[in-house]
Image (cartoon, one colour):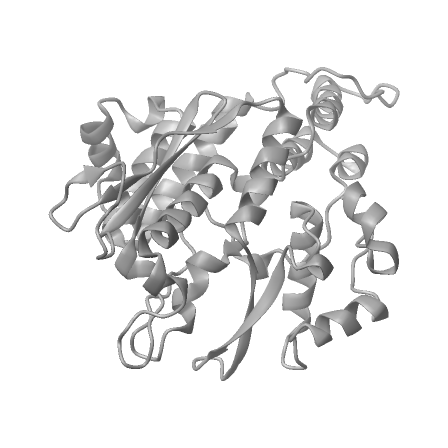
Length: 346
């Protein structure tokens, strides 16, 4: 956020602000946001700009309004470009000390054959992109038919008509990056992914929010001060929940260690003097390890998906697919299985 504050001048978004200033709101209105936008959408957009550190006044991220017949109003969705996604991913990887790379992009023909170069003038059936973060692979497949932007006469429009292979690959890359960086990219979609939302009525392929993808309109609350909450907590169970929420929000290791030390002190008995922050994560019986928490979160997402889609024996299905019980799986294995189910259900 500091780089936005330095460059933004009077329009700079500051980490502590909880609503748009008058100057900021005026510029947002000039960018095409009309009076139909609701307060929750604007508040969620501010939170998203703060979390992603993208500047709406430089058009790095923006709100796009589309008519929703169910709500009988424009519904505003935050969007960025695939370049914005790459900026966020590279920055998050650098701050975490992780290596970031890609495997070769693959395109699928209608007969199911995959190839690493698409030479046909006809659009591919799908594209696959694999992001490698710190040695872990995150693969995603985007089907052309799910994302293509069309005209009223049924033809393709915009870049989808000129560069279908490139556009499909961009959508697959966005999906893969969101899997690799869920905390950094949740709640914001690329323009390439959302192009189909402008298709004529009856031809849209709108996607609902999938398991593991946050709903941007549920992020309207200001950023929490997790350390302050832990200080004022009355018992270790409360601190345990605060720690889990802070971990999910991407809080730094130093702050997580401080929260854990508070919880450990409460579990041990009368609270000692207020602990000072340390550089190391404090392991204790108050909170489970980060890998265990990630696995628990991934399992919860999988079970929610199974309940939503009527999959009655998800544990058996997982064991058949992965060769080990769900209770023994790690988060990447569970999310990889969930991604396969999501693609099948799409």
